[in-house]
Amino acid sequence: MAGKHNPAGWPRRSRLLPYAALLIAAASLAAACAHQIPAGNGADARPAARLAIAEPGAPAASAHRLALVSASFTSPSKGWLLAVPPCALNTKPCRILLLRRTTDGGKTWADKPAPDAPFASPGSGGDAVGSILFTSSRDGWAFGPGLWQTRDGGATWRRLSIPGGPVLTMAAGDGRVLAATGRCTASGQDCRFGVYTSRTGSTTWRPVPAATARGAGAPALFVAGHTGYLASNLPLHGRTVLLAGPVTGSARWRPLRNNPCMRPSSMAVAAAAGGRLFIGCGSEPGAGQQLKTAYLSGDYGRTWRRVANPPSGGYIGSASMTRGGTIFLSGGRMDIYVSRNRGRSWHVSQSLNSAASQAGAGFDLLAVATGNTTGYATQRGVYRQQLWLTGDGGRRWTPVTVR
Image (cartoon, rainbow, N blue to C red):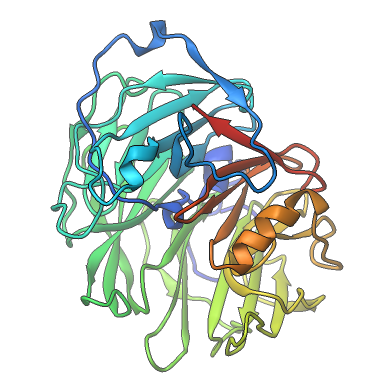
């Protein structure tokens, strides 16, 4: 683990954070209801789908437009989309799951095979999936609650299993993949889970010592440098769990001391290389508002300093941070709040006015950074499943519709 401080006691190293470590799997970005049909080989020979700019306020689920399910970018230019056609949003889904890939930052999208698995929906079975995570042009996973792996860019997929139950979320970095597995109550508000680690491309998983917890829903799992993190809110009591340790699982994960966000109604955590951590804390929500506080650490959570309060609108749900200090804070019923100076000030973009109004109606708008100035956001709902891209640190976001 790089840096001067090493509170959890795991080995020190000095490699930089890969792009994949910034991608927290977009595990919370799954939506819709569908099954998929097997896709054939030879997808690289298929023509790329043309990019179309969505009209402001136009529903992305109209004819010929794919409805976004999950996204994963391995760099600002290379990304993947899991999607369903509009018919999958009908009362009786058309049972098709589709995968698209871009290598030019979203200008064009190529058709790729998807795993031969049902899409995650009530009663869909343990092999169903609702999220994707790619770490390279060849290595990728489709998960939640099942687990499928590709090692050839999606040409073929195979089903895997991990001890501990269904896969709740995944994250990758430092040549490793982490998976949180466990079970939740029928309401999904009380989950018990543990973390497993594997080398990228491997099919062998081993438990991470002491990386077990209970949470009100699936945990947040992410990697920065050589360190893995798990964040969760305990059900009922409102206390938080924030664990950290070596992504290899070579030592026990330990609670971060001095956690400044002990009893929030909701919490969002992000990490970047060099021991930088961000925590956004939200009080009890009401009427679309939530008092928020934010904190930053530069020494792996050993000490914290308070930064500017994010705007009160909406409910905190997700955070993403780059090595350069850009922070995206997003969630439910809220705009994307962007700080380009490590939390000293927060801004919104007028280009997201339409999306923010949709978010206010209850359609989550969630953002992930892929580089110091690049990132993507997803919005989902019955009438809108939209991907947005930024190349200037969140000043302007461009809506992208993939057909």
